[in-house]
Length: 158
Length: 177
Image 1 (spheres, rainbow over the protein chains, first blue to last red):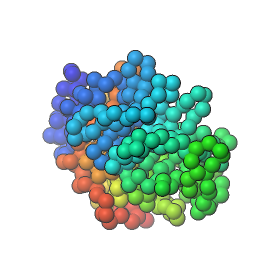
Image 2 (image 1 turned 30 degrees about the vertical axis):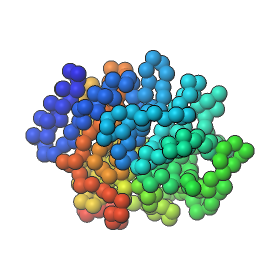
Image 3 (image 1 turned 90 degrees about the vertical axis):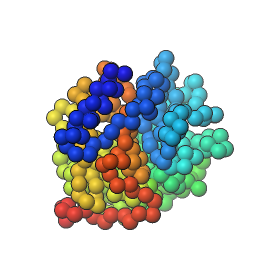
Image 4 (image 1 turned 180 degrees about the vertical axis):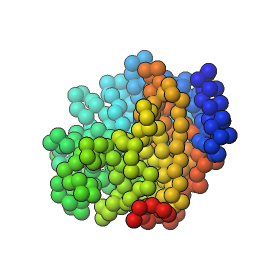
């Protein structure tokens, strides 16, 4: 709480000296703070996807920024999977996720309205590490390791 | 690497077969690693981080041509990381090095303006995400050995960048040719 107040004060002071500044979104930041340690944010439309951990276990969360509440994602999170990178489209319908499961790293695409999870193959074969969905949900950029090099694939989504 | 126009079909027996292509040449850095990809809202621009002279440097390219778009304010302060683009690619955000700190920086390609987000000295930025409409910024910071995500309202700072807006060509006013 103390930290949030000081951050807000700091932003306010800087704003006075340097013109318009980004303002911390206090209520949302407090809500995120209450969820535990958070990483890998992805903002799009009214949605914030991130990887959140509490008690040593991490999972994907989708926060509705207007209601400032996490939404259920049935079928996406698994207790035995480790999420690595997540991205949401502007409609909050598609979530792309790189995760480790049973010793493999895989890219999956989740459709929220269908509660469906679709594995996406890497071709040529490679190990995905990061993913970003473009806001219209029609394409994703995937960072892939191949033969010791990091490459980027652009994958069309039907 | 085969140039980026080659279409490939995915599939090795595991997972869906979706049409894809390599992001292609990295603007003269053919063998370079390419990391941290970020697409603009409709995929016209791709930002990524490549190695230039051994330093991680932000690269902005038009797709699918691969034409490199010069940026005015990302010529120094390497290593760059975690780029993020608005809907039309008007705003380019990324983390840069400033002294001992990692800080978010946003370039407005329409006006040439630069926006910095100062952070308190006890926290370091790790990743960022700029909302496509440029109304919010989310920053993952490391503080006291823990990761936190903090969100910022950019409403008083940036004009919104909405779908259907006019994509900015080149590096914006006052930018390098």
